[in-house]
Amino acid sequence: MRTPHVVVVMGVAGTGKTTIGPLLAARLGVPYAEGDDFHPEANIAKMSAGTPLDDADRWPWLDAIGAWADGRAGLGGVVSCSALKRAYRDRLRAAAPGLVFVHLAGDRALIEDRMSHRQGHFMPTALLDSQFATLQPLEADEAGATVDVSGEPEEIAERAVAALRELDPASS
Image (tube, rainbow, N blue to C red; front, side):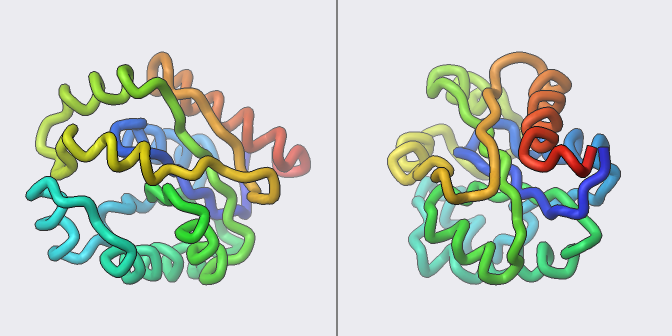
């Protein structure tokens, strides 16, 4: 399956964006960009200290991801980005119209367990509650699909491909 879309793999911390994103990109035959790499150092320092980002912190990060996505328009790509609020997704779409979102979603206990086993990631488990409190799931008028994160990464990536195929059957 190939897609000209740029796909944003979104969800709260610990849902597997960094694991599923590259698997999805490989299946779609497009490049992958790690959303965390677009954060300014000040954001990483703030999150590492256990302090949630505010919107003023997020705008430059979202703008950088949007610029990358816009540069991939018509070529396709996959980028990870929490994109927890509708306003964040709207900002991304303003920079790169036509974005498609894959919302990785799962049970809080499963996600917390996965986060507690991660090595070398700056996002502490303590911020998970703020992530869930901020999350605004995809709305009916947003191009995208919600994919359950239970199971192995390969299974989740296959569910994401199937969900994208349902959104755009002509691209399969």
